[in-house]
Every structure is written in structure tokens, then in C-alpha cells.
Length: 177
Image (cartoon, rainbow, N blue to C red):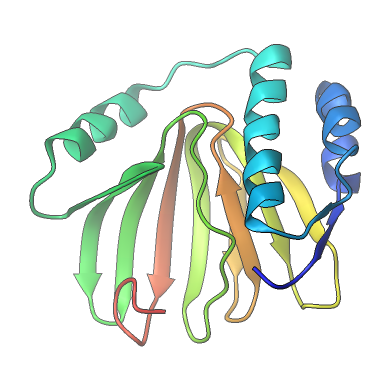
């Protein structure tokens, strides 16, 4: 990671439920190395656990069991795993099963266009439209949707067990972009 990313907690701070989290995370105004990225994600999960109440998660448990079993249509990862429901190149539909404390890499895609919808659990999303902007920090909770166009940087953090449904058009092939 050679870049420096400023962090913008304004949207997250609009909700009074997250004021304490914003105060704590605001102490780190930027991410400028893999170490500061990992530290930020770990702190977000810690502060979330200290201030928020976990909600029931029936589908997460079922899909997490599939991830743990492995097999066809499942990708195991360090943050949890993926359960693929449709892969008809270039169309992909899958569940991102992010365990509490897990987080995906900060990434951007050259061609992949993706739509995310939170099914269960909670977390944070970091994103920005262009390289000149700070990373916006927003809450992920049931029903929240995001669209990431090609070139948009983004990252998901599972502050609690988090289940996200992803629909994407991935011209390079699944997980190749």
C-alpha cells in the first residue's frame, strides 16, 4: 500500500448510535500502510462490540456452516467465505459471509460492477468514488445497499457477523478483477 487514504466519518456520525465509535475511530485520520489499515479495522470491530448489541442471524449461521464444510460453490477465506449462488459469465451472484472481526481488502476493480445488499448482521463500509477523495465510512446493517462502479475503492468490515448478498457483472471472470 503506497497510498495514503484520508478518512471521512461524517455519514457514520450522523446517526447518534455511532457517536462513540466515530469519536474513537476519528483519532486515526488516515490509512497510510497495511499496518494502519489492519489497526483501523481491528479498532472498528472492538469499538463496535463495546457499544452495539448483536442481532439474530439465522441465514448467516446456515451459510457460515456451508463455508466451514467447504466444497463446490464455496470459497474459504481468512475473513469468512463466499457461497456462490450463480455464476454465468460475466454474471455472478454470491453471499459474502464475513465473520465478526473479519474484513476484506481495500480494493477497486477495473471492470467489475457490483451491487451489495446487507442481509444480516452489522459492519462498516469504507469507500470512495475517486482517488482524490477521502474514504467515506458508513454503517452496514440489514437492508443497506451499495453500488460499486468500476474504479471505486471499497472495503467491508464485519464489526459483527455480517452477511452480504453481492450481484456483479465481472467481465474478467469471477475473482479475476
